[in-house]
Structure formats: C-alpha cells, structure tokens
Length: 191
Image (cartoon, rainbow, N blue to C red):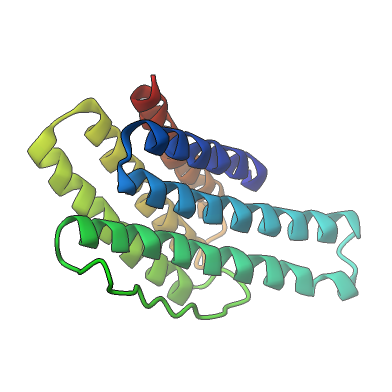
C-alpha cells in the first residue's frame, strides 16, 4: 500500500509543480514540496519494510522498521507543517519572513503521540480548506477539503491501529483516497 501511496504522492507533487508553472500560485509550490516529502517518506518506509520482509524478519534487520517509520513520520510532520505554514501565510496570520518551527519527535513505531501530532496538523489544514470551500464553493475546493478530511480520517485510523490492528487497512485506504482526491483536483486544474 505504501508504494501505491508513494506513486500517488509523487504524481500529486508533479501536477502541483505543473500547476504552479501555469498559474504561479504559491500554494501549489508548497503542495509540491509537501507531497515530494510525503513521497520520500513513504518510499523509505516501504523499502525498509520490504528489506525486513525479504530478509525473512531476521533479528539484525528488524531495526529497519523503526528507521523507516521514523523517517516517514518526520517527513509527514515537515510536509503537513509546510501546508499549515502555507495556509497561515495565505490567511495573513503570519508574515512571509516567519519561519515554521516544526520540531520532529523521533518515534520508532506507530503510537498515539505521533498520530495525534499528525492529526492536529491535518485537522488544521482541513479546517482551513473547509473555510476556503465555504467562500469559493467550487469543485476544486470541495476536492481539496475532502482530501484533507480523508487524510485526517486516515490518521485517526492509524491512531486506532495502536489499539486494534483491524484499523490498519482502513487507514491506508483512507490515505490513498485522500491522495487520489488531491491528484484529481490537480488534474482538473492543469487541464
């Protein structure tokens, strides 16, 4: 699932930069950077899990799972932090010279604290996109708010996964759906 999410994230990043070249909208540049980071994190996490799987879960390879997850978490915090910065800057809540201070915490497996951090960032982004949708009421705005709501739900499922493993596939499906919604919006914008 993570390899599919990686491919979609890279497609979102590609179409975001393509849209930026056409429309010079800075938000698309931030979206490109964010989804490039998400793609890198997903790829590293997927590759580390694949190496452990191919190595038949030998003890010396097991730490790779933690390394992959940690890198994926850090890239997610940075990616969603960039989007929070973009929306705050767009709304006029921050000056252009204000730096976004994101202090990534290193965790080695899915746990409640990491997921709560990501949920907080995604809910903030979803709220801002919902406000934008309430003003614009366009199909593209609806796709964006739906995408970030889906990503928020995916991390709620990842949070619930720390309690019951049954939520893990639902988390990945919701994440893929959110990525696909953003990709759909970018494809509409670029054509």
